[in-house]
Length: 153
Image (cartoon, rainbow, N blue to C red; front, side, top):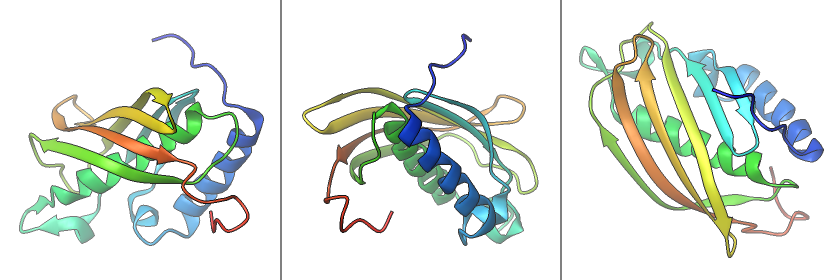
């Protein structure tokens, strides 16, 4: 895998804030110790470790993969932009193949394939640390859903 193209300066600064919020404040992500492994223009690779909080019976609930993939696919869209803009998920399809194991790393990857007419096209996948495919996703995101002056992000 080649070195990723660097983020636009404003996006890189926004990602620092997002990483701090996810690591220290976000009620869901703080429980999974998110660690960015690769961040580049239009691409993102992170490692999370689901805890027993996310168990449904003896397995991690499959809906967690949908939340993770939706989030990092949106972040991959941000990573493709020149300047930070609000986003909204238009469409998301997630296919789950296997369940994550509590306490074991999950690697989530997202790639923004392109942006046309303020809509990004993104794909993603989640694998276990041994490479087992857990879930795949495809989605579209609206770019610039609100003016920057009223955005809370």
